[in-house]
Structure formats: C-alpha cells, structure tokens
Image: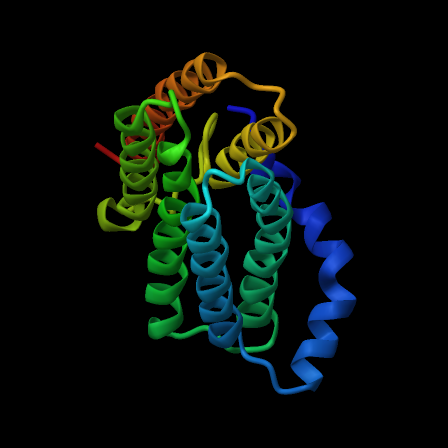
Length: 202
C-alpha cells in the first residue's frame, strides 16, 4: 500500500550530513526525540490557546515538516552511531503518539468542526500505531503499512492546517476531510494487522 513513508530513504540521504554534524557535537538520539516532543507540545499548546487566531494554524504544517526531519534524525543517530537502546525504543514510540495527538486536537477548537471526529481521528491514529508496534510480539516486523501512516497523517493535517490558516476551508470541508482521514486510519489499522499476520507462520 502506497505511503509517504516509502520516501523516507531519500529524505534520510538529504539529512545525513546534518546527522553527522550533530553526532560530532555530542547530540544523542534520545535528546532529539524528547526535544521533538517538547516542541510539538509547545506548538500544539500555542495553536490551541489562541485557536480563534486561525492564522496560527500555519505553524502546524511548518512544524510537521521539521518534526519529520527530527524523527528521521533520531533514528539515524541511533542506528548509524550505535545509540540504540531500550529506553530509546520506548521514547520513540511514546513520544510520537503523544505529539501526534497534541497536534491534531487543536482542530477540535475550530468553530463548526466536529470535536468528536477530531478525537476519533486521534484515537484511530493511536490504535494504528499500536497495531504496528504489536508486530514483533507475534513474530513479525514493526509494521509501517499505509495508506494513513504517521507521515501520511502529517501531510494530511498539514494540508488541512494550511487551508484553515489561509481561510480556504470552511468547517464542512474540514469535517469531510477528517472523516476521510478516519476511514483511512481504520483501514491502516486493519492492514497492519493483516500484513503482520501474513508475515508470520500460522
């Protein structure tokens, strides 16, 4: 199933010189992971606190792009410079789902946007990531199958936030887009379970 995640190797190649520089400066993978979470919470909190200033939603796509870079950087530091650890594995998964939820929830504060649908999307995102993490428990790999994985959701919410910030998207369109994201996230959950089961012997 197609997913933006499949572009990750090319993205990593662009970031590799920066990763080497950060390693030379003594920056660790876990520090990058925690920093990405803290900054995500600050961005989400700022947008939520002043949600009536819809132009602030422009911070979300800008931060989503930077966060994707940080997520790639922490993984590269861990794998390529011997920084993999059990704590890092916990931080990588937990920080991602907390940051994702924080960045989605401010949409619930927009007038006319269904708060229940926003929460549903946040929950389905969490469940689909949990389904991916469960892969190793059944003898499969960590599943990143689409069509609505983490990178795809970041792109979708970035587009939505841009539309909101520019005044291009009425609430009805945002609600429709959220329902589509929810449906694709549900399919992603099922797809990850199915692919994990197909990867393992019966």
